[in-house]
Image (cartoon, rainbow, N blue to C red):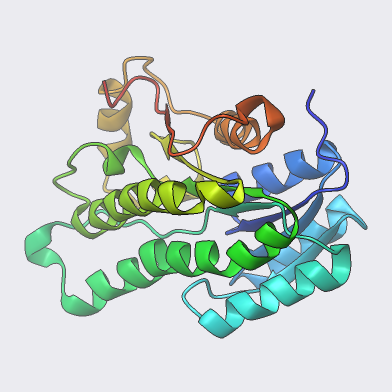
Length: 244
């Protein structure tokens, strides 16, 4: 089991199922963890449960000043920033013709702008640390079209492109940038889907089941680890074969 002892990981959306799992697994393997989310009560409770190696920061990922606070907190509490997991996102089944400008802008601000601000904010502290690892959570909807997920899919394709461009730009600083593409994961994010939609999604997954948060977290930790030291710009689909 890879040790992250002495390293500090920032995980956004850490009050959600996947973000919580990622934060807990980093901490289990010795990392200090900065958890961020707009859900302060849930995030605080998770950080408290993890213990002294974790701190929680209330955080809207679309706020540049909010990112400044996250970085300041990480450096003050733990002295470095070594890993960033851009996990925070929103999802809703909605078609192009039903998507108004405000809805599209909301998806853009959280799923795309938040990733951009996160990557930009960690460059200097990671350079100071001699390098780092950024893992952006996209989606299988960022690998193939999704007729009922127009705004979500648009934002997740953007994450894919930003990951590729940042990987090229930041390689000179020994900052690796990779993306994970989850498929249908058994989390509360899928609960609001229309009746029958989750069953259809499972039927179109070759492994014929939903994935688990831990399976995504294992991929994230691998990409953050020394075992993936020559991987940058990589696209790792954890989707049960849906994108094949």
